[in-house]
Length: 225
Image (tube, rainbow, N blue to C red; front, side, top):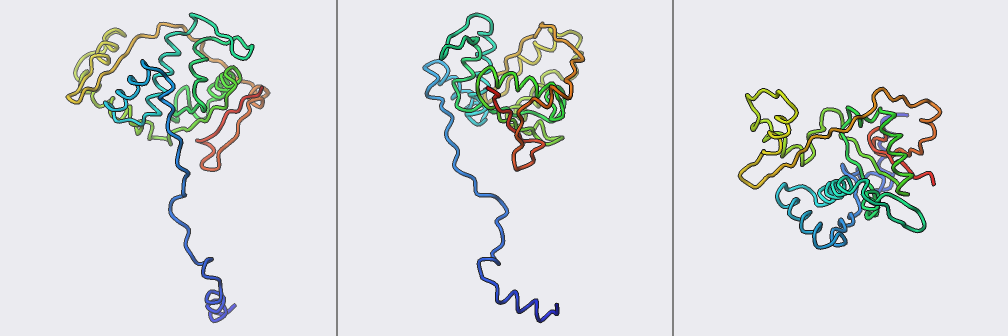
């Protein structure tokens, strides 16, 4: 095809086919986090945390719900639609969606089979799909909470030998700044098993759906029930 033929084809093409694609996709307006359904204690707490650390209220709400779930873990069970589930899991199911934001390394690595298997077990227990989004490699500290928190922790414990767990926990929990940042920390003394392997057969049983945008970082663990 000659240059003249190409120019003729371009000039005769419909104008709408020549409009360049936008650099960013048009995203739907997200639904607001339903903080109002969490009662007179958790709602103001979540709003205050979001105000102080300048993080999205959805992230603050999920963090508070996770903390409440941990606090009540093992104290009681509750019956929902004839199913007996731990009270901690009931707190998790108060949300319409379960979203997990994770880094790309460590125990919750995007390559970790155990991480995905445990999420599958959780999805089956709470009867809810879990949407997972990993921060790209090298960017795990980009989330608002860690970005605002770790720099002040480093300042607070600079030059101090981290000789015991109690020293570390105390230095973290006593970190503050002029705008009102407060950090709560405690030592987890539970014993966790090491070297757990997930077989190929078990891994294939995970009901994982990759998202269109970077499916290696964004995926959904669907409930199997």
